[in-house]
Image 1 (cartoon, rainbow, N blue to C red):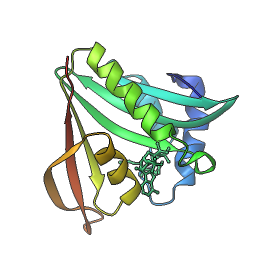
Image 2 (image 1 turned 90 degrees about the horizontal axis):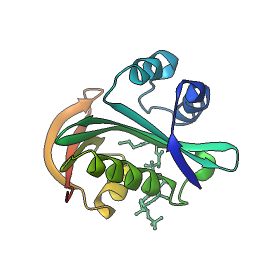
Image 3 (image 1 turned 180 degrees about the horizontal axis):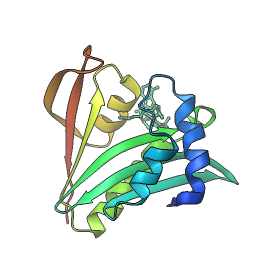
Length: 146
Ligand SMILES: CC(C)(COP(=O)(O)OP(=O)(O)OC[C@H]1O[C@@H](n2cnc3c(N)ncnc32)[C@H](O)[C@@H]1OP(=O)(O)O)[C@@H](O)C(=O)NCCC(=O)NCCS
């Protein structure tokens, strides 16, 4: 697996991956274009051979980084790609002098919550009924040693 920076020419494959996950926040072409135009926004993609297998987007808001989205293609789940993308994002944030990573996740997203806990993120607060006025958002944080 290779992880590298994603650019505008990757938008089509990034949209294809996010569409696979019904119910998950959908950025679409316009959303990705907006992200690529922000100087503090970073998108990394994971590639298996010539296929894009997943991506992560985060903001470098020194001294914090905010993880906005992390999605792995359904055909590549449970192969360590989500973890590898998150690790790379944390590495990137560390190099950019961020000492804390923050993210929000739905309390019913067992896969993601489990991934974040396994990587040392801790729940720091709850936003009640944040998603669809139904599910709570967990705000999770991880300290980055710089
Ligand atoms: C969450 C997501 C990114 C995980 O990607 P992944 O590549 O399958 O995850 P990994 O293979 O790196 O898993 C690492 C660890 O996370 C946990 N995990 C991942 N998927 C899990 C699942 N379905 N159930 C329980 N734990 C899970 C496990 O601890 C796993 O370690 P293990 O495989 O050794 O048990 C993926 O399920 C996804 O794209 N979901 C849809 C989008 C989404 O909800 N993103 C999160 C946004 S907050």
